[in-house]
Length: 427
Image 1 (cartoon, one colour):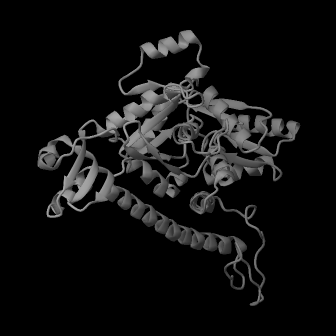
Image 2 (tube, one colour):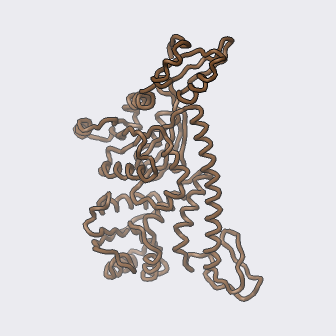
Image 3 (cartoon, one colour):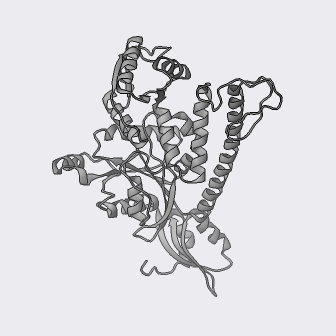
């Protein structure tokens, strides 16, 4: 691994040491064994090789000595940096950066068709400007025969004398265009689902947080789901949605989303637009923070900055400090003393604090609502529409004398329904 601190490093969320520790976890998740680490402090990036020429030579000798197959940079490399470094280090060594590593992990963990489409698009957009003869499947110039053909992924023809590199570049662009079209259909499908949810007035709560903060474990605990959980980065990739009934009887939709990470590749953020829109359209966010992590504060900052970038900065947030079971008693007490408003201490694994979390969710979503049981005459159809549009319908029943609705309405609308109210009994 190669890590660089540029200038004072004041603009970095994590220190160089902590960022490299995270990079090593990413490498382990991708199945790469880390044998050694090199670091350098730079005032400015070397335009040719990113790191200084002396450090490149040190890297070459170390890589040769250890017999490594991969050199992994913690920063995103330009196509030129990657090309120059691979030329110096030799053809047997692959130079990849953090972005390429994250893309590879996403590729391994994508399970749904949507996830696979999004990852493929991100990978192709990353690779296109880095395309070289060494990368293409056929690194040779086409011959002069008109019948000679070549392809990427089994599609496309090349004309006489056309370089394979040019063919591959054109075919990748065509594939990117097709993927974007397919993902736009996915986006429209999600949009229709969201419109349906709006019509049924079921609130949407999204779980957000840094990767490996425990979002999937929390969803499993809250909804008795069986989402795959592992102590690794990006264990789950595809979003999962479940219905959840709160203690007060209200029904909500709970969505688990892909974890965030510092230096998230821009291609991924763009490709996962449809998924990220699920967050931006939520009524409430539960920000799950691994309070046992030494960089909990920096991870929390990264997530909040990402939420701003995707247009979700104005959505109400409940902060759930997770993994309190891993804290020493004195550390737990210190955290408790400094707990901010709308924050809770939980253990998704042991279900500690889950009751308080559910109550907070209900209070945040329904504090301005009143629970009503009304019987509306059939000539009061406009009030039925108002209840659907402005309230949250739990139960609707057609009777001989009218339409019975059990649900929640904003306080300011209750007076309109007063003549038709029934006495609430139990839940």
